[in-house]
Image 1 (cartoon, rainbow, N blue to C red):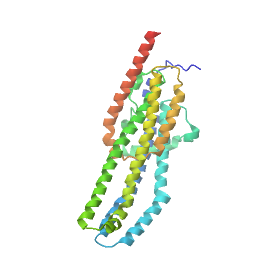
Image 2 (cartoon, rainbow, N blue to C red):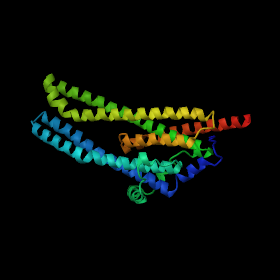
Image 3 (cartoon, helix red, strand yellow):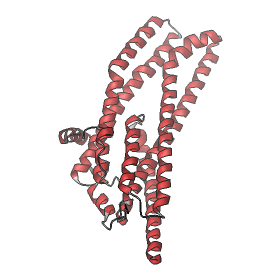
Length: 315
């Protein structure tokens, strides 16, 4: 079958549809759920690491080992039975709602087998209203995809949008991983400093300093490992998209809708399984990353328009 790009202005449809109320509510709902999951994760960090660090430092001057052991056991039980599962559920629901936004705006078929049932209108309304309690309106959520997409008439616009999702997510995770690594190095240096100042033997250093702080150290290692795994998945996906893009510049007999669905499957799984990044860090990096994404989108748009111009001249 010969799959040719249509003359419909797909890009303009994307630019317009992303800013209608239903779509903005999807973004608001997923933003609220992700933020609430991050808040839970923040308090999980506080109670499972920071409090343990404070108790461990206090233990250097007064023996409260029994208290640290009891507290650690209690936090471990709460984490296994409640905390982690609640964070996971909110992440998955947020990923589903974001999937609904993407599939609706980009007109990609919903994958019921992979994603499950679509989020209900009631859920989206409920969480978007909670978002509005923290923000005056949905203004900051407008123009999720660059307006430059409007210059592309064919389904190729979908691939450009998906690529921008991947590159944006990769950039923020790469930056966050570097920041966490710095925190880990500082933590390890701080432990060595304590051992040096207190004149601990190797045995007492591990018993009184390292072991009590081990949960915090392991959590940092885990965060770095999970972010690197997410980056690897995004990098692999970006390579797939780059390969597809090269073919699109040479050939118009590609079923873009099928390819877009395959790419969207990988985007959804990465969103569902990736570790959380705090809102304050995301907001700090947002403007710069949006500029970079806008630049790359503009470059791809110009490449495709140039390709079509050359094709039209040769036919």
